[in-house]
Image (cartoon, rainbow, N blue to C red; front, top):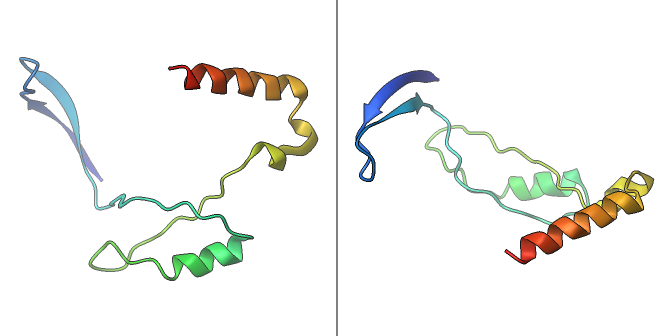
Length: 91
């Protein structure tokens, strides 16, 4: 990855200094699947189109819900989450 500073003119600002980063990686998007286990997720990945002209990588990351935390999710933490959800839904 190459990284250097470049001066650019932004349409709404007179001048700005921006960090310019060159990369060979591409984030082409993401999918969310509800699967039984990691093996099923791997089977889905095998069906994914390759967004690159050559070899590429696909990351599999699990998502967790409150139920996954068992007893570690105390009533106090659950209440705090509910308050945050309510506050965000009011925005």
